[in-house]
Length: 184
Image (cartoon, rainbow, N blue to C red; front, side, top):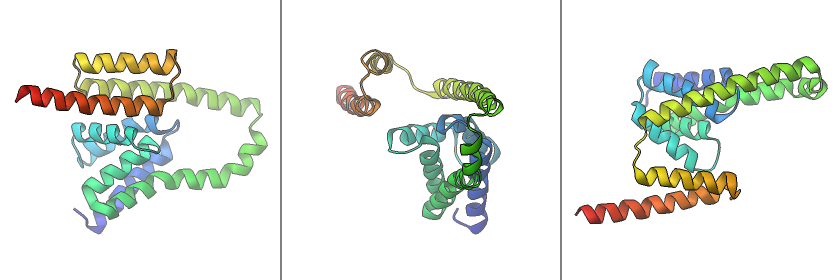
């Protein structure tokens, strides 16, 4: 599905997501899910969840990585480029246009309060995204143990997140190999 209309649609959909979502990658996930699975039916919820997982485990911003993977899945390299450019273009345009104003008014009390209100909305968007992903995720004793261990390492022992992600990936691969061999 690499026709010009689809590539334009990918760009437009991810441009809207990038334009109307504040708070970074995780805040964009509910809107990505709605656009991709419900509105356009470019992917199933499980496929989007896989894209989230890959997007989280690869370097970069999860929303941009997810857009790239979905664009590639539905439109090959042109689709990946369109989705990625669509996602980043609004931020580039807005930041370029407003950079002087941000520096001038960043200490303004009203601007500070508006940004504080946006932060509250972002927390709610992230919570909704986590709940939706948790409903679709596969849980077993191994995933609960890995999650608890990751939590302890990150928040109690303050191990850098990239070590935890690499370790979780390694343990998951070993676990899967062990489980597959045991089942055979």
